[in-house]
Image 1: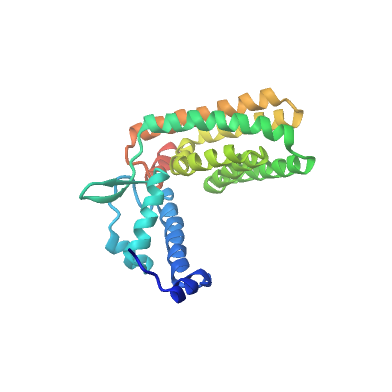
Image 2: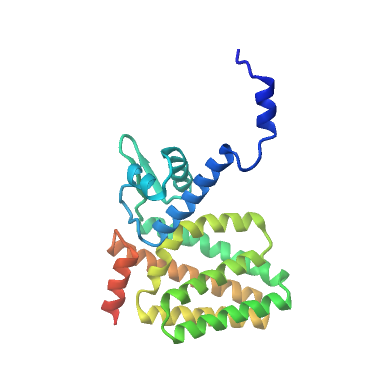
Length: 251
């Protein structure tokens, strides 16, 4: 039988948010965010070992919150655990990419149908402004900024669906696909093509053509997935550094 001191229990029940238990959770959450960005941005490459001692020193934290962060990232598909070997950054296969984008394409098709039924005139104007900014960034050749704007447009459409279940499913897949999604734009011709696809579904949205816009969105995401899968199959350790090389090669 475990005995608990009544005074200690009362102290625990009235603990303030600044006490140690909450601080540990804050460290774990912060570690998740930093590691996720390092993986997505290619600072930690697919297949690379996550050495606890080095990361603890880098983040100035203990092993416990770091391991908690690893577990969260494992659920997100960004980290893999191997018995007696520890954690590594998950590798990416072309089959996995294609499966992810098949689901994303259909989620975004449904999201767009719901969004068009529920969005206000102000919502539509904001989408048009985001699209206009993307066109401007494309014209200036600012690829990464344009990609981020594209990412924001897709997320905004999903948010306008006002369906939390759909949003949660989409968010999880977007985390897993984000580190490879940009690879579809490794050539200028595909970047131009993607812009035309965006223009087409945005025009359909403004025309009130729900079915047409939804199918155009689905086709756009599927096309992106196909090209990302092809890129990954040729570059098994695909990273932003390799992408920069591909950019130079494509001229």
